Amino acid sequence: AEEIERHDFDVVVIGAGGAGLRAAIEARQQGKRVAVISKSLFGKAHTVMAEGGCAAAMGNVNPNDNWQVHYRDTMRGGKFLNNWRMAELHAKEAPDRVWELETYGALFDRTKDGKISQRNFGGHTYPRLAHVGDRTGLEMIRTLQQKIVSLQQDDFRATGDYESHIRVFHETTVTELFKTDGRIAGCIAYYRDSGRFVRFDAPAIVLATGGVGKSYQVTSNSWEYTGDGHALALRAGATLINMEFLQFHPTGMVWPPSVKGILVTESVRGDGGVLRNSEGKRFMFEYIPDVFKEQYATTEEEGDRWYTDADNNRRPPELLPRDEVARAINSEVKAGRGSPHGGVFLDIASRLSPEEIQKRLPSMYHQFKELADVDITKEPMEVGPTCHYVMGGVEVDPDTAMSVVPGLFAAGEVAGGMHGSNRLGGNSLSDLLVFGRRSGAGAAAYVDALDGVRPAIAEADVEEAVKRALLPFSSATEGGENPFVVQLELQKTMNDLVGIIRKADEMEQALKALQDLAVRTRTVSVVGHRQFNPGWHLALDLRNMLLVSLCVAKAALERQESRGGHTRDDFPVMDSDWRHVLLVLSALGEDNVELVRQEQIPMRPELLDLFELDELKKYYTGEEIGGHRADQS
Ligand code: FAD
Image (cartoon, rainbow, N blue to C red):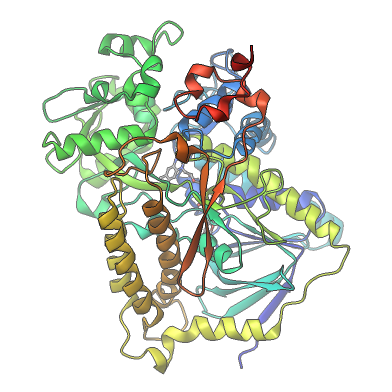
């Protein structure tokens, strides 16, 4: 048998996006020895692609902003299905996390009086997104990495070894977690270049692996977002929640085909861009749902005035939460009022001067010029919905980020609960910082409580994991299909049958197709050797994509209502009886999942009192709001 490289750490962080890096920094600051493992190159995570900004109620641009307003916006955005404790921690701690980034060296755009500037975004009452042009994620990753380097320099001075406390393993993919006596004991990974295995013995693991978008044909996500963390957690015995809720971002590129799905940032609308159909009409005014009627402008004039006088006007409906805008675009296209390539028009050219557009949206300008030969300072963009973000993820304790498996933590996009049925733009970058830090602290405290007694990995588990990973090369799968073929079919199934608008019969069809795809996934075969073999890598990813897709389809079929990122053609309205229900998924063997319904914990009374009774009535059952202040008098 091949000799397997072995490392011992206190905490292993899987993922080097914002959540993973912030977790690693925290665990190291609590004195732990930390590994950071990432599937892609260090620095290349989704976080780096984030454009619009990081939401935090600092009140720099509008002093009326505070954590309570941010909390309310987040709960509204998630249609009150959010884990309220996570939303509370997030709203309270986000400003500190942004300020802290400045101490790491981040340079945000400024207001005239030198404060961190904040921009408007869908669903946020006040300008709230701290940003660096439309390249916020890049600055965030740059400074978090810089902080890690600076900690490594401290460690070098203290121990003579830069990597004594934080070591980065990049282009390294984790394929299995190990448990012993019900607790986390470590994990195994392979190096993408050599194909050799490496094991990590550690009592605490933080999953920070991001999203699942690659299970869909049209997506803003890049190649590594195959739901690995979600699947690893399930297989280790953890539970997933909210998996029926996927965010279809309203504005992805639709043309040319090679770039279909690539994101067009919401900042275009935040900075004044408007959506029009083929008749030139600003159609969003027709799509303001009842629950948002009071907060959105009903005329173009009022909407336009809001950009310069937000205190005395209501915001334009182009800035409704993403689920609303995506559905509206979908309806316009279906009704035959779409743009030539099956989207709608997003117009910034007639709204800002070319100089302003180039200054505020430099990445968008280049993206359209280079990829579509469209000059956005002169003509409108063509845009349409694209699978963007998964609200669902690992069920965790809000304060420590630990899953139901002792020693297994999750933060960032791979964790569930925080965003409920729909995430507000900008709330992910803040989520990463707040819960990245909390998961690092949670993992460190967990390790301390073990008092030096660490579960040992069972050697048989390692052998089994290696055998399984090498299966696509073996004669057992000879004649099996090419993983790329199976992947395409999986993506098409999810896109067509469990997409933005869902129907029971289509989802049943999807579940059947997934059963068949499960068999084909188990027997995919690859040729060649283990050195940098993308076919083999995909064969391993497919296993995860399949399991996660099953979770999405099963939960989506179960939830008989429309809410946030889950729209049912056959149950088109939101139903209060579903608001307090969580669909909890756990693994049942290799490629099956079990679903149970679980009651949400009721919101703490003083948080419930932050909302007016009239608003709550739109979401809650009568019984649930019995304890509200206005109801008691
Ligand atoms: P990621 O940054 O996605 O990082 C995941 C890490 O896990 C990567 O390092 C990956 O290599 C690693 N990984 C995955 N699987 C494995 C494995 N098996 N083994 C080892 N490593 C693994 N949000 C906002 O708030 N504001 C925005 O403006 C914004 N803009 C966005 C623009 C785009 C184009 C996209 C795609 C997303 C945007 N988002 C935005 C969403 C936000 O960027 C992501 O939700 C967030 O960055 C996720 O961060 P994360 O730390 O959870 O994971």
